[in-house]
Image 1 (cartoon, rainbow, N blue to C red):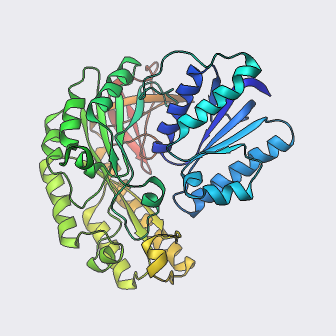
Image 2 (cartoon, one colour):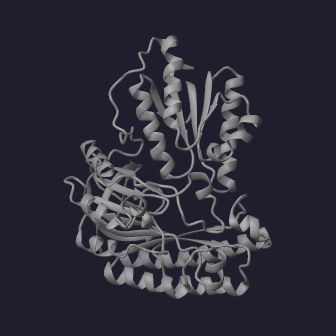
Image 3 (cartoon, rainbow, N blue to C red):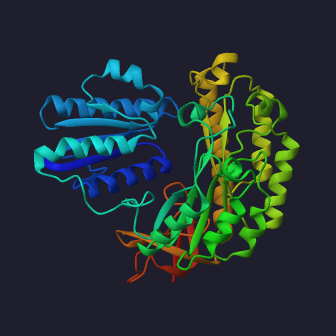
Length: 439
């Protein structure tokens, strides 16, 4: 057990990762040493940043908490704290059921956790509780030095039928634009070149602070900051889409021609049941306009199968639509009932798990062929690639069409490439969704 060392364990999405990085920075300013996602935690204190989005994520969070509780019982851990989405939503139940945890904190009160730890440690290790002054946006980056995530808002006002996120994060709250831009300048000063802009709902940025859509202005100003080489947009919402972002994307060379926009389904019947506040025709018109105004754009989407009320006809229509739209990147998941949501309160989860899984398998098999076709089309082209790491004989990189962790990669055999640098790579082949290339 290493004294004054804190293990930070992050579960869930990149938005959670940003929160963990902010906590780490504040703790380091208070005199602690923080280790993120260590394969074999050794610190005397552990903080678990939980996810509570869907059933599988909640189960993973509970397993990790119980694993750390066992370490504490074996005297391999002195203190255990839990923060994040799961504890935000189930604070009282978790406090009652797992008393071995020394403190439960929600998604937005991590400053209180830092203050508590600093106060506890002062008499133990002689910490003053004071270190370098931390700006509110500063983080200890856990990603490779050349890319990171920038979270521009929290929460969501959409209240889709199946989604618990508004119950966890609350209403949509935009961060002030100047604060975000200060963060971007600081990140660039730390060596970051690629910014993946994230939120629960990019489309609503600015509505609460400025009474109008301000995503386009924010990204336009971000792209003008010297040193920003790639900007990529994640998690736009199709309803009330801010169309003025499209000419900004088309105009700036350092804004990746990439958009992550979760669509969930394609029939009026299912879009209505899901409470998506958009029609199938409006959704198709949106996709047509995005592709028309930003030629060559890579579209990533997420779809859902097995939502209550989805008929065989709805699912067949979904498959035909995916075949017609030919998304560059697509993920899918099966509906799982989340307590407190509109679907849980008003619909019966009557589609068998076996049918959900069969539909999911069919949909992803269809997308695998589409992805392979798109990979084949890139053979012989020259792509600008950023190098993330080296594995064995290959350098591993990504094109502007590939977001870290979730998308395809390019495998390059070369004598010596620099991590975090850009190269022009000729694509020579592919395997599945990954590409092979050479200088």
